[in-house]
Image 1 (tube, rainbow, N blue to C red):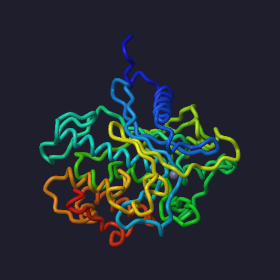
Image 2: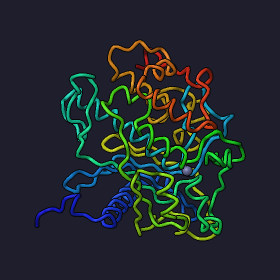
Image 3: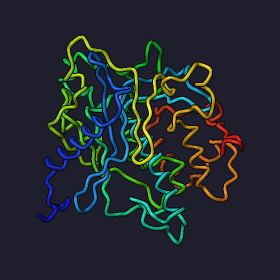
Image 4: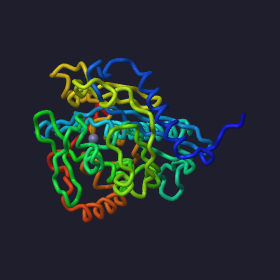
Length: 355
Ligand SMILES: [Zn+2]
């Protein structure tokens, strides 16, 4: 029987297929870091679909926790924001670095087709479509505006920072965080490109998501989601994640671990921002930092960026000219946006013996 192409697939079918792929990938992962019987979590994945309708999960993240602003690591060794969407996106960045590395070394990659003659940057196959799958409505404005969520006993309330600008802060474990809600972060990825500042120096064009697919959950409102994430397509799946808050018993609590998975690379588990099982002493040692920490991603970037003389993360970020123009325009439109202090948190250095 001939395979059906992406064009032949209707939106519902695509959403169902993507959800099933993400859930079954999660099921296939080892037990470590997964919720126990009385725990729930959220799941997110970055997925790519080719013109023949083939679906590949490129990265996966789970989690619901966020460190307080006083727990932020100035060396970039901890993962501050461990919500599923943020973990999945960072794992996707790691996947992109790996693909660039493969293309550079053996001229073979699943998503990169060539190097732009003019800019010398890597070109991603334009026939591929990229989707963010989440098992739940992202926290912040996307879930707050729906009436249903007020009735949802599992809603972990975000704190309003600016109603006018729709800015909400994530809740912490007894500490105030300075991490914006997933709704805010996704809106930023949609406007600036999901690859972020450093990778924009290596990719020929910004990488924009083609759609967001949301699993069955208690707080979904199509109008709200379309309005917030326009022009990105919103699709709903009718399949529920086995560990979603709605699927577990009433007295369950959220799981403290986050699982990260990068296609063809590795999977890992973090808790409180560090790799599960690391002693207090090891947590702040560079080589034990999670593979998607700011430190680890900066290291991947420096390895692939030729002819650079950046000594700090801040210097590397300043060099992303086109991205910084888009970023400035975004900040003008979002005046209350929380910006990380570069003097305090972007002075990350990779020692020579770590390169
Ligand atoms: Zn979130």
